[in-house]
Length: 88
Image 1 (spheres, rainbow, N blue to C red):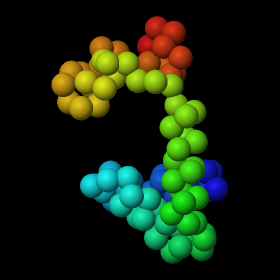
Image 2 (image 1 turned 90 degrees about the vertical axis):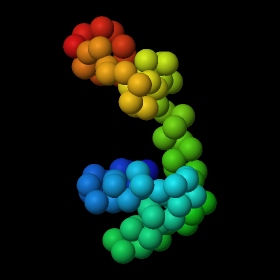
Image 3 (image 1 turned 90 degrees about the horizontal axis):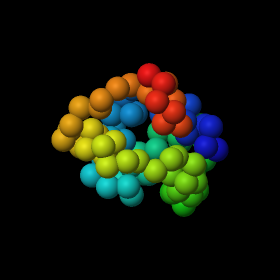
């Protein structure tokens, strides 16, 4: 199911809708609805669990990463990967 959600989120319009959601519950409802349109039978609970597992897979963000995302600072360099090896 996670791969199905990732595949759906490659759609720019769906990405914008999810990003525009005011909270996680609304974002999950958007994903469930979009999934139903594509023939998937996701439940809100299953999507919430999938999102939770994705969060656990991602490395923790540094304060600089958080500031860059929030618009407080520009990233110093573009990383080649998420391992923070220093290669740009």
